Length: 78
Image 1 (cartoon, rainbow, N blue to C red):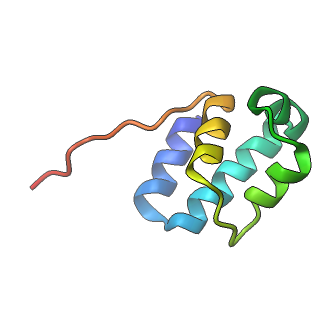
Image 2 (cartoon, rainbow, N blue to C red; image 1 turned 180 degrees about the vertical axis):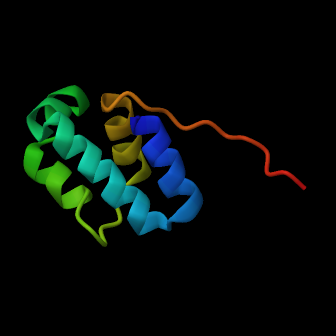
């Protein structure tokens, strides 16, 4: 369900929408758990996943991993 949600946001939204969606998922799992899994502090996570924030790619990758996701690259159909 998480992957389907993120894939929909990725295909239909912009960067801010994706970060917001990742933040919603992280909050639903629990920010304390995500903080433990990523090694980041809870305040840092909240700040990085705020609407309009521009987190570092490394942070997004850590959070994606903590929520059970990964990035896969597929060719764009011609």
